[in-house]
Length: 437
Image (tube, rainbow, N blue to C red; front, side, top):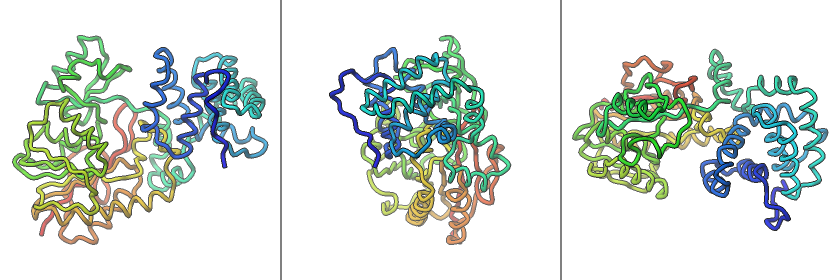
């Protein structure tokens, strides 16, 4: 078992690298970055927050590439999460940042000592110094490694052989920040003008009528109109949901697995349904839907929140449209959530596809004849997408795919697949299904 605990009664307060190593070891133990980051970064002085963020996410993005470079340098396997986090963090600084090598090495070695792992300090020092003696060779190894866990690399190679090189390259990068302008408040062109007047570099989205890309790092809450509900932050490919559904004005709509509310709020920006029911099995996450509705000033619409499980929940009347943003591996959003590389396992995929099937089997009977179900995932694995849909249509003869009249994505036997694309959206899958009997 890994020895990852450290005593808070250290002689010296842990330095920035020590705090990052603690966070990285938590992720190795199965904690998600989204649940841990705020808590950890709140303890960092304001001047160091940007560096903390960059080093944490950068190390996670390159984790498996850094591992490829490190493993040959460790003579015998050592089962200690903090040691591996320290090595990868140290290497990341040397290869990808402008931090002077001597500072990166000494700060990382000091961090190991502060975490009471002094027995590894000589090893960390030696490996990082070895890099400085042949930087081009090790940098080449890291930069040309695919940076994915082997099981995921094999699946992508099998699913998308012709896109493999671009996929592995993209999944090492960060994705851009995208806004979805709220048309109930302001037009996209007017909001774009406001950004320009503030000197904020931005560009229009390619496929979504409401998307604006921010071309520089900014504080979201400081953007014009944040508190007035002028926009939300949402990936451009996720925004396409609102454009491909049929007219739902005066209709009954169910948003299954709704939190944190991107799709719920988007529907209410574009339509006025008779009733929209947002279901999620997490009351904490449903609270975020409510907060988003309040900020966007959409609370006057007929929207009901229900904390329940989409596998078993039954509505008292059938819906004109059910949107199922299904639980999935989230492999399409690795650029935003690089910890997914460490958290997901190959065995998770089979469990997830069974869960998706169970939810589909519960929700499909609750669609009116002539109504629709929109199946969505943020996965790029065919098992969760086109293969799931093939199985669904085989079981449900009263289901018919509604072809999407769009130019985006890759047409599949059923539905359309969007892959993570440079300077645009993440990986999403859409399949619109009509109930014919």
